[in-house]
Length: 83
Image (cartoon, rainbow, N blue to C red):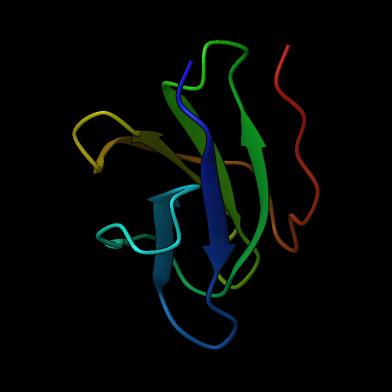
């Protein structure tokens, strides 16, 4: 399993992630408005990012560093969990 560090960028429409090797390359993925919360799948292959500013959730494939889906979740979404 890959270990990664994920950081939502407050005030920006970006989600940054990198392997736990802090000297490794950082990936930047454009998501919805005001990314806030993050949830990870058990296999570390997918991340969900709540976009507080537009009420959506971005589904990110961490292997390819791409948004593979975005769906409406409601105004003011903040916290997520992945089951």
